[in-house]
Amino acid sequence: MFYLEDLNDGREFELGSLDITKESIIGFAEKFDPQAFHLDEGVASEMFGGLIASGWHTASLCNRLVVDGFLGSAACMASPGVDELRFVKPVFGGDVLTGKITVVSTKQSEKKPDRGLAKLQIEMFNAANELVLSMLGNVIIGCRP
Image (cartoon, rainbow, N blue to C red; front, side, top):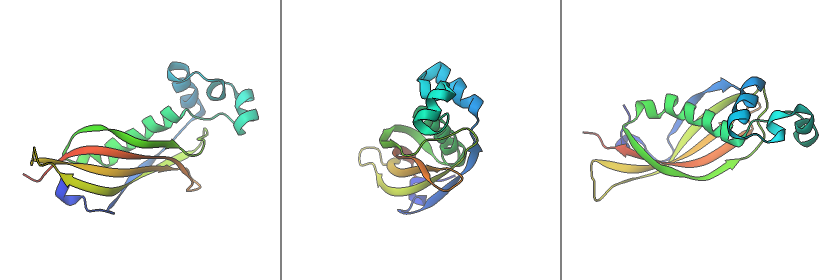
């Protein structure tokens, strides 16, 4: 279990990887982001060279990696949100996405000393090791009992 005291500035956590399929791109887009370049290969090919995932789909996949690769092993209490969410490059069907967290800073709460706030740089890369998504996550994490 990771506690606030374990999260030194600069510490990195590899989050593993997952495959993204054309079918999952279309399925997500149909439900949550039905723009033509997520649904229509002709439109997407003209604009991006192929069908691309919604940034929100990519962010959701990233969150899955964060939960499986970090939060599930941390004394996570909640999150007040993310800052600076960026969809840096398009994500295509067949891409393999890999995630990484780097601890930016931590601060113990003065009002509730059993916890603190960790600021985390969260990044996702495609198989060519190109950055496709980045954000700063803010996570409330418990201190060691």
